[in-house]
Length: 147
Ligand SMILES: [Cu+2]
Image (cartoon, rainbow, N blue to C red):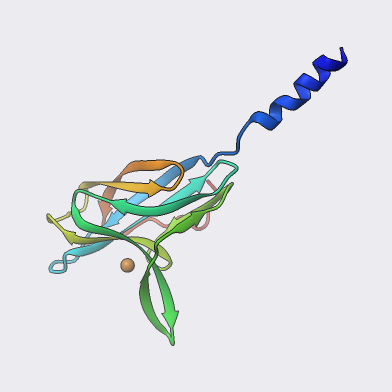
């Protein structure tokens, strides 16, 4: 009886911690005429109990996709290339205009409101996750409600 009890108590320790990435509300900003660069946003949630790290992104519609963060230096907004962005366990990171965002550089075709763009996010532990983001004129912000 004693042995059986010990066996059952030991089981939970064998379950490994894992990140669980969920991506919500992806969007791509409709680019203005002219420049062949635009921005994408989304909310990346981690419902797991271990952190994951976003290490890159790609898309067929752009020559290059970069992770950026807008920072203010002497009152001037500057975009800084990010090599990795930590998605904390039981947490989320919002990608939006001011703050972290995804930059689609060198667009291969014109993007218009209503188009759908596939973006693949590359995570250190979870691997590649592809989302389909609608092209919008004005992205919806999700600051004020819980998901
Ligand atoms: Cu940027």
